[in-house]
Image (tube, rainbow, N blue to C red; front, top):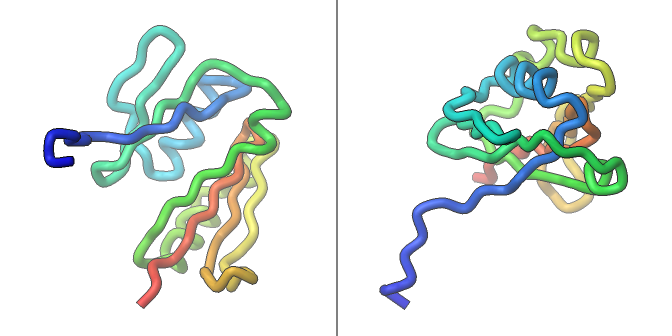
Length: 123
């Protein structure tokens, strides 16, 4: 399979209000690196996804993404310091805890209802 090189794998994340969601992700720490045709590419440390100007409640409410990080407590402090829950309608966050599947995680719901599992790297 050496001929089957891959340079990126990205998901298309729904947004209820594209501008609000873009600001939310920038406050979370992502950088908007490209935007056009109803899609914004958001990047952090070489990883990226496409935020699309498209919303379907059933889809957004069942969409999940995992972000693996080295310092979960620093991410929690950042979420709290940025006051994301109060500043963005619909955003919810649960402080770090060990999940039944063994990962220590923050559960963060974005303005469209997308659930992020921000998980700490295992030793």
